[in-house]
Length: 84
Image 1 (tube, helix red, strand yellow):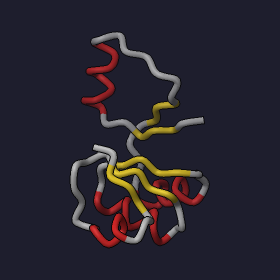
Image 2 (cartoon, helix red, strand yellow):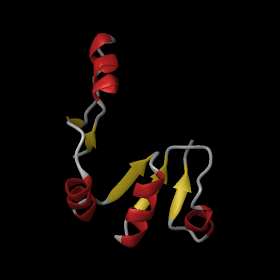
Image 3 (tube, rainbow, N blue to C red):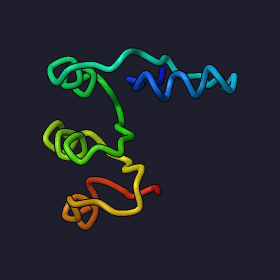
Image 4 (spheres, rainbow, N blue to C red):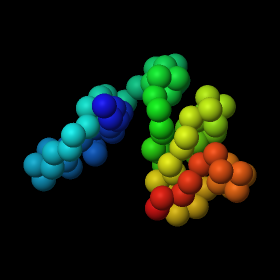
């Protein structure tokens, strides 16, 4: 199962364009709820610099949905991968 906290503007774009994905979209969550999701996941896909580091601290594989990251050591040591 893929669970994704989704910003309201992004949700509106998906609905407007009638885009559907096999993903369980949930409302945005606070820090502690995000940590709970992180603790119980297998892999993280994010564009958030903070979540990249939290994934590392929680020993989770991380796919960074950006072209570059401020946490280059995570990529250089194989804890995360840039996927654009």
